[in-house]
Image (cartoon, rainbow, N blue to C red; front, side):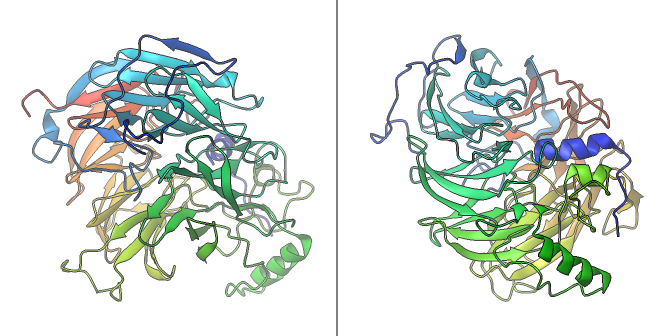
Length: 551
């Protein structure tokens, strides 16, 4: 039994190239000077002051511990968003696919040529740039491709090979330290934008072994010191010392509940399984015995949502949401290649971590499906299904098929929430029929979906207007949802969170693969992605769209 090959080689390549503190006065901060790390290149236009109390912050991909991609202090809302205009453009030297970080009047982002940039938030003026390739010594590295995490006076950013975290002085771009290699298997990378809590960074490890060479990588999740990168604990996502491989921790930012003492993540597909397990799975699927799946070791946390104890990394609960999913590129292209499984999975992993939502008991929909659960962990899967699990037990509170799945989504890279509604993208890279619920209209392009947070009911679906793909993660500010399109015009849309109606539209001139960050009165977004061949778009820069003065 073999799965059909994808017609487009580029869509396979893209998948594996994907699949991202204290205040300044805190006396516990170390290494505040500007001493250069040996061997790195830095161009500093001038130190910019690191100060507390800034109006605007976007601290990592998920913008905070809850990973909600929500701006709470912005004045961008339904009444003001229509006045937004392009304020400035910065010509980055290569593609920018991250959500830019914001703090203290500056924005920070890496480009795919290894450069890490700091710009003036209001003018787009270059403050400094640092070449991460000087310390990213893996031959396959592109420097970094995750949103930097802001912690006091530094940026913490994972490398796209080797799997290390780098600390960078925010005022000058000087590299302060590099962590030990967190996974020394070939082609290990960091694509998560880590979350910092109480002086420690929580970060996942992913891999490019799906495309280059297979299979030794075993996915893991780590807690490291934010001060020096030393490892506190590491938790494997597969049985140790076994032939289970893969299960990367890919995208967005881990969510943390301080009172529960738990960190929430989601995982990817297997690359390979032990021969005996493959044989068992083949028999199970051929006999249509879909569930329960008793073939696999329960420690194989494939395509799962998990909660881990922040003190020791022990798994509090794990919910597997795809029974079998062994996938790698060579087997997609040549199913009869040596070592490929008889049954190829659908590659329906999670490209994003869960968001934490604390349900409002006074809501008209609270209790309809929640059984009085007050906290849910919500994540979208590349299958197109959005899952809400009980934060305490991992039991399924609701699940919604928001749209069609695909090897590149489905939902990917980051949903967002305002606490009342959940918003997700549907990339629809395989151009399947996509019904725009609750209507009967359809599209074969991408789109965006709004759901009730308490029940998962689909409230609206908005198609990408030109029929393009919708790969970028969503962001929300006071009832306005920002979405991006992978189209030649590089579209940015502001949607009404209540209805999905388009309130505003801007363009950047090249396909957008990332999402927007939101300040008090502006949004920031980069464009370009040359690793996608359906089609390829060369990045032209980073863009600021701002409210007109007085709005």
